Structure formats: structure tokens, C-alpha cells
Length: 252
Image (cartoon, rainbow, N blue to C red):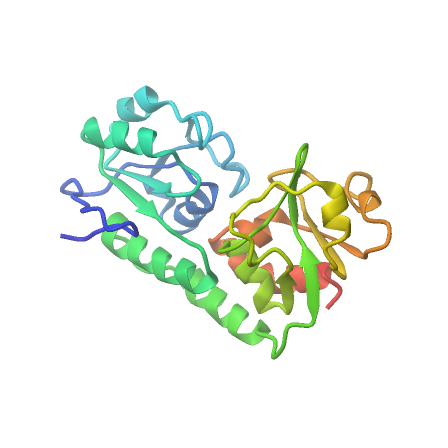
């Protein structure tokens, strides 16, 4: 019996024909690989553009009743983006749920391959190999910049230890100055951020939408790079173009 990324036994229905995704990255991954299977997604699933499926509220407050009404053969979830209580409610209703756990780029590639083969029962997509090639070509030799990576402003929150986005940046030669913090997403007051010794501030447009008018001005003495949150934090087809897009935004 296959197990998901958390080691939970996965018992699929006889055939996977109807899939609900509760993770934007996984929604895009399945929609680009086997779009005929996808019947439901969250309100935050913005890619691919024009996606026409049933919307089921957010990643943290999915409409469990509406999901079960769709009679899915599979629900795709993530241990960071979705709540255990919602995952257990779906499993208690007899819905097979596959939970991913992704903290690094290598884990993303391995997890997606397992998900397609063991949960979705679809062939491995060509974009996955293309993404690995793109990242292999982009790997730097040394880390050259020390960065703050805020993800929220009210209050200020930054990337801490053990995050996918932190690993992505490290592969591009940018080290998170809070990579050794005991918390994964610590709240840090602005004066402390200003004194952290960073020579770069990386400002993504999600989850908080930092812009040229709302972000760099708080760090007047430090160069800022505005980056696509999708390229920084999503694991899916966006990984193909992410290295080039992020390097361009970082001025590399």
C-alpha cells in the first residue's frame, strides 16, 4: 500500500477520475498534467489562468461538505498549507487524501513524482524534467548575498529555518539571514530587521503583496528585490521558468 509524504497509508478508489486540490501549487501541477481530472480547487488557486472548476473556499478553511458532495476520488493537500482537522474530516467521510511535505527543491521534485505515480495514477509530465534541468543549470558555486525575506508586514514576519523558499534562494546564491532561527516564520520587529546585517531584502508579492510603494521604503539603506511569490514559493510548472525569473529580479 502506498503512503503519502507523511507516511499515512493511502487507499485510493478503483480509479482516479475526480480530484480536488487544496494547494495552489498542486492545482497548477495537475491542471497542466491531467486537466480532465480536476473538479475542485481553492479560491487561491490562480493558475493556470482561466481555470474553471468548483471553488471551495481557502486552504485554511475549505468547505469540507462541498468537497465531499463532489465525490472526489482524491484530494491533494499539504502539511503546511492545510489543517490536520480538515484532512481528518475528509478521511472520516471516506475521501482518499494525499498529503505532501515539501521543504526543499529536491523534496519538491521527489514529492511530485510520487504524487503523480501513486496518488493520481498519471504519467510523469514533461515539465517536471524540464524544471530539474532548469535548476541544475542555475546552481551557483558559492553564496554571495545575505538577505532578509519578509512575508508579512502587519506584523513583520520573515522566512526562518527549513523553508522551501529559503532553499530556492540558497540555490541562487542568496542566504536567508534568519535561516538558523528556531521558528520557520518568526515575527521580528522592524528595528531588529534593520540591524540584522543583510545586504539585500527580498520582497515577494505573496502572501503579503509587497510593491515598489509598499516595502523597499522600510529598508532605505539596503537594496531591495521585488520577486514573484509564485516563482519563489510554488512547486509545479512555474519551477521551469523560476530560476531565470528570480535571477533577473535579484539582479544576477
